[in-house]
Length: 202
Image 1 (cartoon, rainbow, N blue to C red):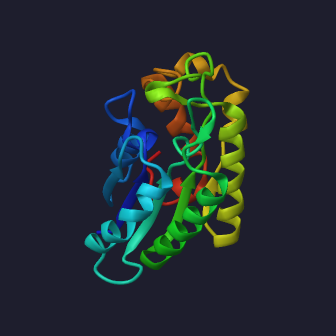
Image 2 (cartoon, rainbow, N blue to C red; image 1 turned 135 degrees about the horizontal axis):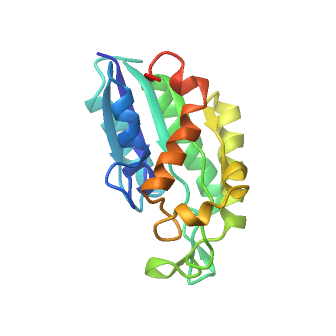
Image 3 (cartoon, rainbow, N blue to C red; image 1 turned 120 degrees about the horizontal axis):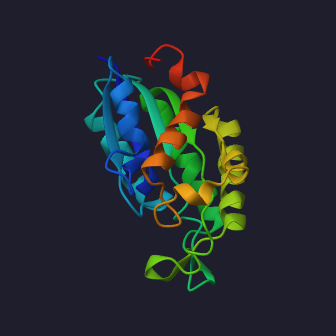
């Protein structure tokens, strides 16, 4: 049976809802084995340390994973105490290029779910004195887009679409969606042909 591996942080894990968009995706992928290996608060540095071993454990041979879906970067963009970057833009880009290279060795297709805006009234500061701003998240999202283009990774970008909506009403804590938010989040993902062409039951 085809395999789908999801890597990332809290939005992929589903914080704010008991299923998240990844759980909804798993329900639709009736003909696939879906592994959700997202870990809340992970950065690209942390993901880079584990992604190859995780892929090896779920791969019979090269390219035996049909899709790798990645959702990470918001935590990387955080400023500690509002000043010090948790992961610099330079390191973020280097990490992404390495992650994409590893993913490409194991999967037929690599997809990146772009970053999403936050409610800054609740994220300056957020937990553990991390500060999130939409300006920095958008800057990191642009780096993701550039790296995806360079590495032939499919990029699903809906940052601006969410800004244009009243997105703050469907955030559970300023960062993570609530149930309604994940429903809308998944609806965005379903719009893209790389997700729903032959695998999602409409």
